Length: 635
Image (cartoon, rainbow, N blue to C red):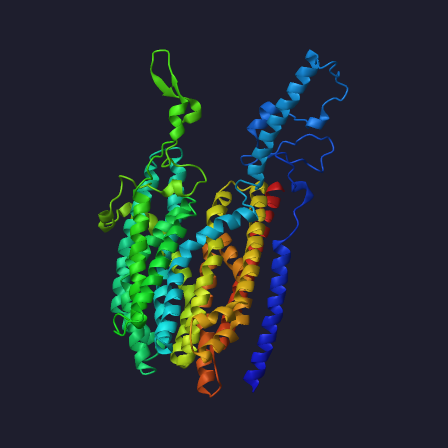
C-alpha cells in the first residue's frame, strides 16, 4: 500500500511536470522575432537608427569590415535629395542622371554590405538560425537511426509471425547488440571532426587529398574495430545474455533464442562500423542526403528479408534468428551501396542545346559560347550535399582496401577520442542495460515482450533528438575556437538559445507522436495483454520525450565547447546511480509487490530530468564565467 501511494504521487508529479515542459517548449520555440531583425526584401533596415545610415559592424574578431573601408557611410535610397531637377519632356539633365546612377550604385553596395553583415550576425553564417539547425538535423537522423530502425522492423516481424516467446527473446538480445554497438561511437565522433578539419585544410583543392586520406583511414580503422567487436560479441554472447537474464533457468527457450540472435547479429558488426564511419564522414562534409539513402536501402532489404525468413520453422533460419539474418544481409547490402556511392562519380551530362550555342571563330574553328558552358556533375559544389561526397574516392579506393591495416598516423588521430567518448557511451547505456536486466530476470514473458516493443520505440525515436547533438557539434566549434572576446561570447549565447529553441520544437513534436503509440502497438503483437502493457507506459514516454530534444541539444553544445571533464564526471555518477535505483525494483518484486515495465520507465524519466537540469545549469555557468572574464579584462 505505501508503494502504491508513492507510485500515485509520482504519476501525478510527472503529469504536472510534463505539462510545464510542453508549455515551456512552446514558449521558447515560438518566441517572436524582434522587430529590428525583420528583413524587407534584400535590405535589412535598422528600425532604431535615427540618422538613417547603415552602421558599420565589426567583423573578423572585432576588426572593421573591409567593405566599410571603401564603401564608407551608405544612405538609403529614400535619402536622395528630393529637390533634384525634374526631367522635362522626357529629357533628363546630366546632373539628375548622375545622381540617379549614384543611387542605383549605392543600393547595390548596400545590398552587398547587408548580406555580409547577415553572414556574421547569424542569419546565414556562423550563428545558425533555428530553421538552419532543423534543416541540418533532420537528414542527420540517418546516422543514428539505421540500427534502431532495423531492430524495430525485427521486433514487429517476430511479434506478428513468430509469437510472444520469440519476441521476448529480443528484449535482452537487442539490448546487447544495439547498445554494445554504441561503444564504437568514438569512431563516428572522431571521423566527423577529423574529416571536417581535413576539408577545411584542403580549401579550394579540387583533388581533396587530405579529405580523401582521412576518409580512407577512417574506413580502414572502422573495419578492424568492427571485426574485433564481432569476435567479442560472437564468443561472449552466452555470457552476456546470461548476465542480463541472471541465469538461463528463467526461460530456457527465451535464453537460447537470445544467444542465437546475438551471435548472428555479431556477424554484421564490421559492416555496421564502416557504414557508421562513412555516414559520420558525410556529416563532416555537411552532406545530409547520403545517410538517408543508405538508411532507406537497408530498411527495404531488411523488411523483405524478415518477410521471407522469420516465418521459417528452422530455429537457425526462422523466428528471431531469421530476423537477425535479415538485418545482417541488409547491413552488407547497404555497405556495398555506400562504397559504390563514394567510389564512382556520376556520368557527365551533355545538354542537347549545346550545339545551338556553338559559335564560329575567325579562323574557322568553333567554340562554346558562355551561355552553354557544360557542367560536370561530379564537380564539388557548395551546399549541394551529394555532389560533395559522391565519387570523392574515385580512383583512390577499392573494396579490398578495407582489409589494409590502418597507419599509425590514423590510429594516433583517433586515440584521443577513445576514452572520453567511450566513457560517455558506457554511462549513457548503463541505465538501459540495468532496465533490460530487471525485465529479463524479474518480470514474466509478457512483460519482457512489452519491454522489447517499448524499447524498440524508444531507440527508434532517440535518433531524432541525437541529430541535434550531432548538429551542435558541427556548428559550435567554429565559434568556440575564435579568440575570446565579447563578440564570441554573444555569438555563443545566441547559438545556445537557437539550439534550445530547436530542441523545444523537436520535443513538442515528439510528445504528439508518443500519443499515437496506442494506435500502432497492435502492429507489433497479437497478444492483447502485451498491447495493454505497452499502452500503459505511453504517458511516461510522452513525458520523457518532452525533455529529450533540449537534453540532446544541451549535450551537443557542451561537447562543442569541449567540456569533456564535466560530461565525464556527470556520466560517472549516473553510471552507478541509475542502475542502483533500477535494481531496487528486484527487491520490491521479491517482496510480493507487482512490478511492471511502467515502473521501470518511471525511474528512467527521473534520470532524464536530472540530465535536463544538469545541462542547462552547466551552460548557464559557462556563459556567466565568460562574462566575468570579460569584465575582469576590462577592469
